[in-house]
Image 1 (tube, helix red, strand yellow):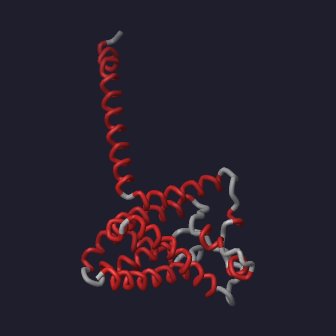
Image 2: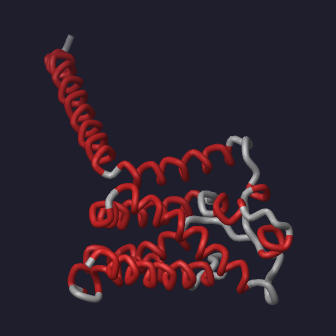
Image 3: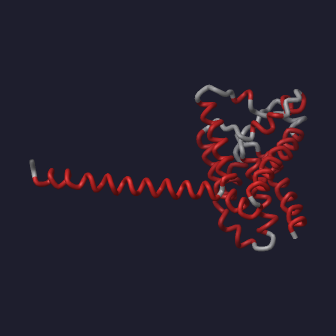
Length: 213
């Protein structure tokens, strides 16, 4: 055996130990972060599970998506909620979950877990219902999916509760703000849903401020 081979073989156990320690502390950090913001990561987890189920052919997008014709005219109002947890393309869910992980912890800390979780679901219902209603004449059969409407709503809450009094704090969310703006200009993105979510969130934020102070 060559000297270099003996050296490489001798160093492998140490590399394994270092790698194991690194993985252990990375998982420990990730777990502690998840436990600190359980509502945010529960929402991310549900989105991830639905995405996985779709690509394993356990769920169909056509059964989850929302449109005026299906959700309102067809009286399938559950679609407004189910569509907000549905994504088809990897980049779509990646961008949305990055945005949620960026905004969620700040609002979960500010509002508390239960209020944050309830606000997210309320944003889905209100903004989703307004969005499909606005499409009644122009695109009643066009289906929408994705969490970005609710995430824009969270951004609206942040703007009204934090940005109005200290706009400087919004610098921490600039990547998410830029991402949501860019996505809004895509022809494949429901920009009406984005706007409805943002406006609903701003109104909700001001209402929360009036109750909190």
